[in-house]
Length: 310
Image 1 (tube, rainbow, N blue to C red):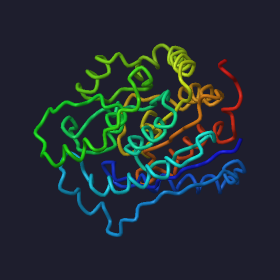
Image 2 (cartoon, rainbow, N blue to C red):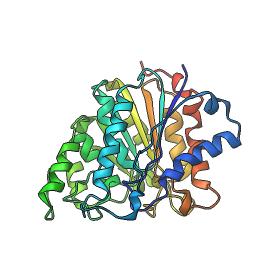
Image 3 (cartoon, rainbow, N blue to C red):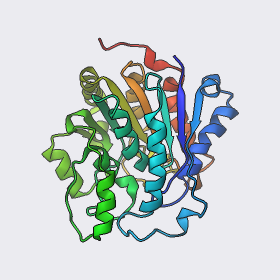
Image 4 (cartoon, helix red, strand yellow):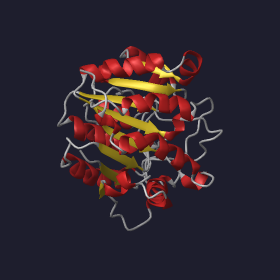
């Protein structure tokens, strides 16, 4: 079975521009190395139609920056993803992590028992009334789970109404697994603990190895109909993976992440993979995109058709 690649070169949910260029960097790498599996995949491009550069200002919503143009484009993303052939292994390339807040409900609406493996330094469970930054890339799991109704600081009613229109509870907490956490705020960890969401911090993984996380992923795959694996490149340590907008010290190594993903990508349940938050403007010689491409190569080449869990 072939691969479909869905490219969303839009970074409006991030704290700074550059993630859109990170999506295009995949095409540079794939073509430079003449990677046949990449070239022969079905490529679907979803781009905004906004004519004015959105990055010129943050918009009227202080704690949900660029929210209104983001919502307009999100509708287009939702429509395209809702029409995808979901039996085909799919790689999503996104300019920032906010788009998972649209991808997950769109897929879970057709595959209700969807498991999510969130490989990321951040929990991304904020809403505009708990976020310290107002950047939407810190909010996708709050959109897709509906677990965060809290208001920790005042918020204009219009902002809250727009936010509520985006919340589509589609992923139950028992279908969510965090791997590599190390940068989160108290409201997010409170939600993780309250809902007993399985999670592994980067410190735990460095100290004890990846085996427990892999076993948790295996258990999730066994009870779900499909897996969505989301790789935010800031899970890696910024000492070598500089090309990302939200670096956090104390991250994982390339080998640690690949020890996990090489196994995940062999499972037939792993049908959807996302890689996000690559920012070449902050990088050296596109190194972070190269690390990501190498990590995803097994999936691109069809490694997910290997080992059955049944």
